[in-house]
Image 1 (spheres, rainbow, N blue to C red):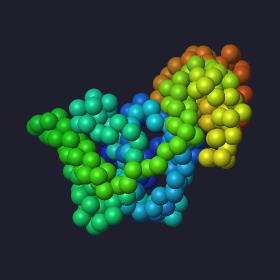
Image 2 (cartoon, rainbow, N blue to C red; image 1 turned 90 degrees about the horizontal axis):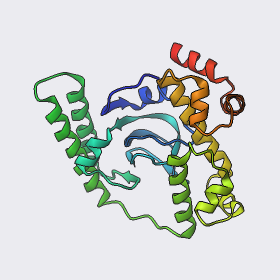
Image 3 (tube, rainbow, N blue to C red; image 1 turned 90 degrees about the vertical axis):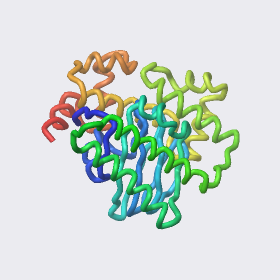
Image 4 (cartoon, rainbow, N blue to C red; image 1 turned 180 degrees about the vertical axis):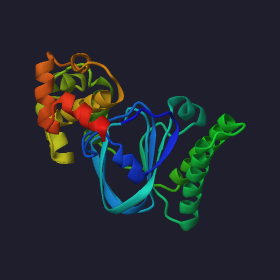
Length: 265
């Protein structure tokens, strides 16, 4: 998957084709992303909370948000990937949000705002940088207006623990920490943490950590030329051999084969 300059706008179909691995694996990006689903259905996991979505739903994901998704029923939509400087300047929401555009005018406004940004990004013109900033700011305003019409989500102690767990593995996946160490950081037991993730997502906490690590490995393999051993070390693996076994268990391929096939495709 080539490394592309941000910001960028993709159709949902193009974005999914360029995914480095399965979309239902937990991952997090170092830049904000906005999904705008105009057709189809699916499920999004955001910070260990699983939610169904339908048409005309926007999903805002600030950088380092743990998420995964599955879409079906012939989905269509747009995906906006922002750089962090643009996000900070424009004042986008600092927390993840799932926003339903209930009315046709709201739907037209959001689609039109994204289309205008995409047109500006597509052709080099005088004043393009300023125009991109202006369109990005307008996008943040559009989201703010939609958020005012979206009911606040309830939260409880369990949701708070899962949100914190999502945060620490999204940014701390390179540490090589065990589930016991992650649980200790959150001041809960490993058993309690795994019970929470099983109840919320049907999978143990250790699986989420492994998915996050392997997805990061996939990204590194396809977007850099770093040796496999260096990637393994950077992700906290004790040896390249151990990394290769873990990678094959998730992807069915060796790291070298994954890199080769991914770049050919």
